[in-house]
Amino acid sequence: MAEVLDYKLMYEAQLVQIDLLKAELAQLKLLIFGTKSESFHPQQQTEQLSLGIQEDAVATTSVIGAKRIAYTRIQTETKPAAHPVRMKLPEHLERKEIILEPEEWQDGCRRIGEEVTEELEYEPGKLFVNRFIRPKYVKADNSGILIAPMIDRPLPKAIAGPGLLTQIVVDKYLDHLPLHRQQQRFSREKINIPYSTLTDWVSHTCQLITPLYYALVKETLSGDYLHADETPIKVLDRDKKGETHRGYYWVYHNSLRDLVLFDYQPGRGREGPSEMLKGFAGFVQTDGYSGYNFLDREKDIVLFHCWAHARRKFYDALPNDKARAGQALEQIQQLYHIEAVAREQSFNADQLLQVRQQKSVPVLQNLQKWMRQTYMEVTPQSAIGKAVAYSLKLWDGLTTYATNGKLNIDNNPVENAIRPVAIGRKNYLFAGSHEAAQRSAMVYPLFGTCKLHSVNPFDWMKDVLQKIPGHPVNKVADLLPHHWSASRTK
Image (cartoon, rainbow, N blue to C red; front, side, top):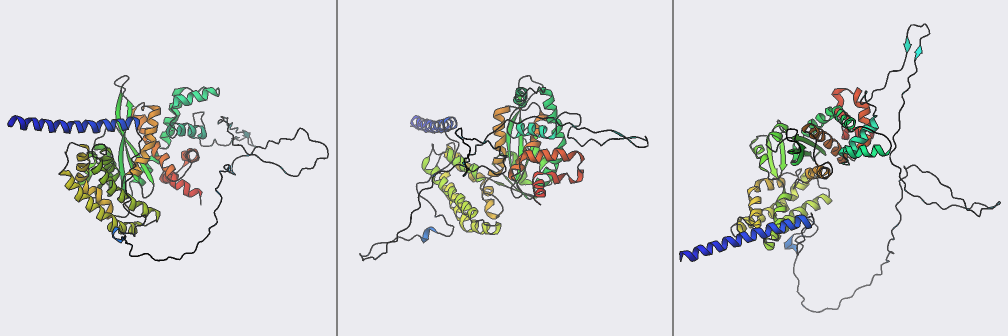
């Protein structure tokens, strides 16, 4: 009897192992061949597209008897389907007129009109030389020489002007074009710039905007609500030839003021956020990474979590247990539906809090009850078991958003800010040194803030490089993208 029991336990353990391997295989196939989208389509719509509609308000009807129904037919005028038209080109673009006269033109012909066809054309960016000529004059009494002072230049000893420096930095950090490719592009224009010169220009330009970075740090952390996340970056290891070190960008997003901040650290330990968030008071939203757990012990910080990460666990569990994972995803989708409708109706923080208390809290309560019951029914090592355990472990943090109307349901704002880094990694592969990684951490948030405030990064940086050499240090924050944009619209 004991042997039969042992075999039965072994058999059940093997079934669990097979389920785990199947889930891992399905996830690996999805990673390699599948789409990155986590969209989930329930079989039934769980809620109407209005927050005022309750499920119990939908009544069933029965046919008692047949009655004659009178109706009036209303004929509506149908509009013809709109045909696609050519895009109108912006008025601010320079127009070069090319007049095409007919070959059969004769004397005495009268012009009765014209046909105009516009074509959007492009010429590669052109390099040109600014020659600053400063005439010298001898004073009338021969007491000295007059000459105009040289204008402030970003790098006085370099031949590069502010526009060229800006383009190099924008190409490298925004369009992810490594310097060696930029060097090749210059060579095609018969301009041979050594690679070391390009790196020096970038390095010195970053030194110029260092005060801007620290001003951005101060403003980003001055609020009371931050998103936080981290992403790896390979850094060339000088001590081990040909090998790289795994560093991290710690990213903080102030979604109330649309500001983003990067901080490079050699590791993923708590040292980075501990130093950066020293003195911060307010809410910090993160995923479930344990490196942030120390924040929960800070008296002035409320740590809470992200529903997008919890949802991802259940999405990954669909191949393991479609019924249970699908049920969880339907409930989570209701939470997101409430947020979407509130966003469409432009609710303020107080209105959003009221809606969450009335609509979201009951869904959360039912979901927690279901998870507790489900956890008793599934194998803890299975994908669905891990998904349920993840959410239950972080439940208090997952429900905090429903207690404050200014908080987001997930950490998507900071993940969107990280996305350009992921794209860049595919091009430049690694940072050349820890110093280079830190320079990237300075430039990325400045360009990210430009994007959040619809500021053209080239226009902003070129103007800043022209002004910053003589700009008062105590007013350097005025040059940050959001302040710069506001000052130009006045």
